[in-house]
Amino acid sequence: MFVTADTALSTSVHAATSDVLERLLIEAEAGVARLRHMQTVVVRELDQRQIATADGCRTMVQWVSSRADVGAETARALVRVAQVDVPVLNTGLEDGDVSFDRVSEVARLDDPSDLRPELDIAGLRRTAGLEVELSCDDDHKAFEARRLIAQPDLHGLSWKLSGLVPALEGAQIFSTLDEIADTLPDAPDGARESRMARRVDALTAVCDRRPSGDHGQERRSGTGPSSGAPDVIATVIVDATTAAPTNGQQGAWLVGGPRVGPATLARILCEGTIEVTAMTSDGTPLEIGRAHV
View 1 (cartoon, rainbow, N blue to C red):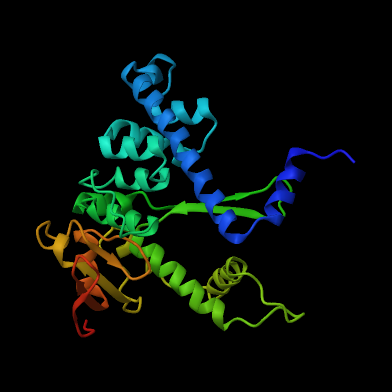
View 2 (cartoon, helix red, strand yellow):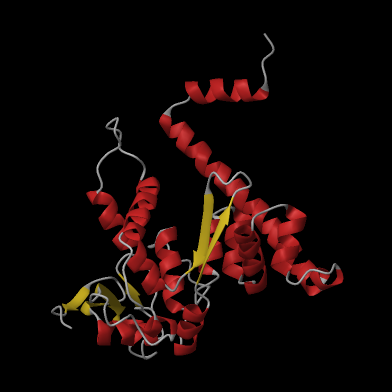
């Protein structure tokens, strides 16, 4: 029987101990980091030569994505690391001591020289997101950019929905759909369908209710939810270390993940039933405010 390299590798892996496999996994990631370092050095030089403009691309990210055949997220990470050019990041990648995912997230921090080993990648991504200042203009732009697109397929058998909503509205939509989905009965055969499929059923159930009257004028003006809508219950987390000196432009988010800027935060405070939790930089709650309107 012809034995391929993949078959030999599978046999070796099957025979190895868990400790050996763990070491192989880590060593492979170190190799990826070294290759990414080589790519960032090349991207840095090409960026200085303005290769993207010369080839008719709008951005360096677009050029890297097309030439290296990688997704936009990977291309953005490569360009971001290349443009930061911090010695500790370059050395960590070159030696394979730091993963590229960590370096690409650290490159987004205000202080990219601190690798923040106490945080995992998700924690780094959240920290970087909290350091981005969100102004009232950002809130308004997010609201003005809201859209919903429905595109049927060629046979008319299904529709593809896509769009963009502000963080608060997105959190409300999915929270409501999940609540409705949990009340729906199981399929006739007793099978429990996926969460995504049940959200579709929940959305259809909402549309079947066919609310009457024009409650959308106030929302279309961007001044807030309709007067006929129920109050929104929201829990706002505030990082006291970053929120206070930036007047709320940093360090505030809703439970569930979405970031909120000053204008959205003001809307929540004025229009909904909320609970505010202030936290220190290490995540220790300082005080939990009583829910109020």
